[in-house]
Length: 340
Image 1 (tube, helix red, strand yellow):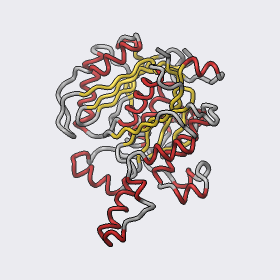
Image 2 (tube, helix red, strand yellow):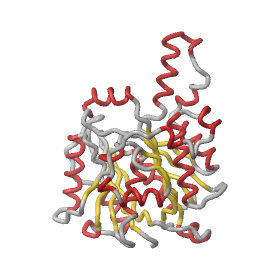
Image 3 (cartoon, rainbow, N blue to C red):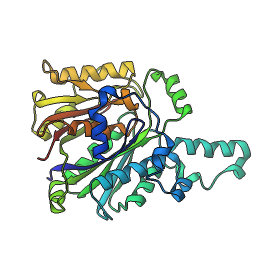
Image 4 (spheres, helix red, strand yellow):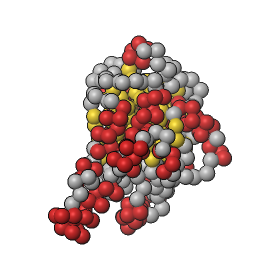
């Protein structure tokens, strides 16, 4: 089994856009950072070329921009052996709505051949894979709340098992007025929603060493499980098999964790469930907990930003990335900062 290291970061969010140095500077100044849940369109202009801006939908532009930033940050060039795992909650919802509206207004003649490819959930993965020339495995994960964390965990497992030597992993979502309205009607009106994309480059320790890559840290353990809950509901079970499995893979105890990055986002019932899960797992040991959703909003790209925050700790420090979704999907990752 291979050790899984992080060699690059790339994010496009309302709070920060850039690679590791830009993200680190942003995280160092969090005390003065103002919440910013939307991505200004001009932030994409330096990464997205003119013909791409015309051809790609906005959510695909977010994914391509963050993917390129992460690949460049890791020093990867023409990486034919690179895989891609991307998480998204809603895909290209704006294009899908536009495609359906065309039919409702004009019938079959109103269907757009240009919009149709974007109605497929993996359109962001396809665009990003072409942009960074990722020719290995390509996987799109569609899940509420935890899509970005699940993509990181699945990618880490693929590298650890030897399935692929390097993976670009993360998530992307776009904020849309219709989306906010529907979520509010479903009971998540207090949730802080945002948009953006975030990716990290995960490599095996041997592959990173062979090319002399800078190593930012290690995903020492990763696991995902399901807890009993009704669809889009919260449960009462607080026994976390995912957290226990991630700790076991990392060879760590709850008392070894120095900080927790959680998925709290203003959804009261779900946030309280997550608190109960963490309380049960850690017992009297209560490492500090934080969630970056309050600054950039909750979206699938937030996972990569949280991972970067965990890597900012002193070398050797262990942190936990944790996320739970309504419906019961749970993800836990143990992250070790610095070079192993």
